Image (cartoon, rainbow, N blue to C red):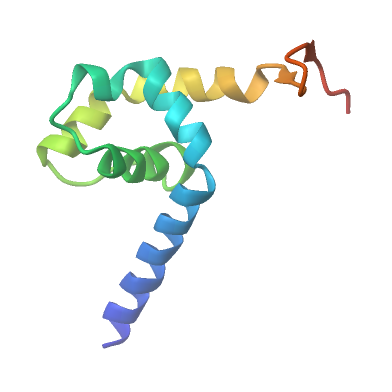
Length: 101
């Protein structure tokens, strides 16, 4: 029973992280054309797998078709994620500005 509870907690955490990063994941999927080029892939399953790969453990286990599809895009996903993290922000008027730290 304890194993099931731990799995439930991990699944809940992954789903929460996916929902919290939904806008970022939408941009990643759009930029990489993952869904456009693989219309059979469920969007939410793709978001969960990309969350685990890019924002989570950094790896995916298994040999299912969805896992293999996302893994084929791992390099471009990581590249686009890095680009989106360094891209300048846009304010409400649409003008670009850089945040200085």
